[in-house]
Image: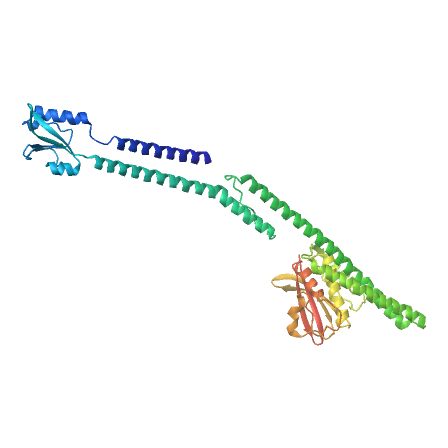
Length: 419
């Protein structure tokens, strides 16, 4: 394409030069041919008086010696000596049989011819210039389409990648000089996106593992603490009481460290993986017994059905619910399991209730948000993540978490989808 534009530009310049030289050459040849003029005068002399035989190759007028016009073949011809001299016309004596009978005045059209040639030259130059401007415009359009615009797209693409936007692909077009580069750049974007996704997943997996281990450690530590408190109360001698008290203090230290580790890990995890599957409802009884390590829940039964759950995440959800009840209520806990329709779906409802103070009614919707706690709980340690994570787990099992105040007490209802 570039060669075509180059050839066309050169051709237009050559045409312009040739036309200019041709017209200038014709200007140099402007004027009447003396031979033709002399032949015309001789023809008039030979046929003097017979106007029909006069030649008509040139514009002229014949006047006699007194200045009277005897003949003219054009209205543009001067008809007097003064007028002819003023106009620069050619005047020759008309000699008939040796006598000068008058003059022949030939019209001098040199100026008109030069003006005509100048006009032709101007028109030719203007036309060729317009052609060249069109060529320049077409070439600019070609450059913009094949170089400038693709380069601007590459520049914009690089800016987006630098800002971390790896989702918008680079438009591929092999018709410009950056065609192969755009494909390579977009491949780089795709690979960078995969690399970042893999890195993010690895980091989240690592943090989730730390959070899971931290959470799993808290349950046996809490059991050790409760046992040490019981031993402290039942010990008969002071030395044994000191030992149980030391176990209790160290349990609190471990719990604080594990809580900090858990909270920092959960803080950075952008997405916790939940993998629900079809399970028999009877497993819920096992999970609740595992979560209720202080055995504060009474006996309950679970209807015979199948539910859509992730056993690990559901256990963690129950752990959070029971830990909150232990911490903020420290009363007996009742558990009910029953089938109920919720939001048009058949569900298994698990209601876990205590006899604690509950929370303010307007604070109920906030408890499922990250870092939100009831206004009457700030004397207790906590990060406001328990119910947030519980709600996250349940919703990712297509379930629903509902919080209610009782009189007295607090109730958490877990709706699990039946399958």
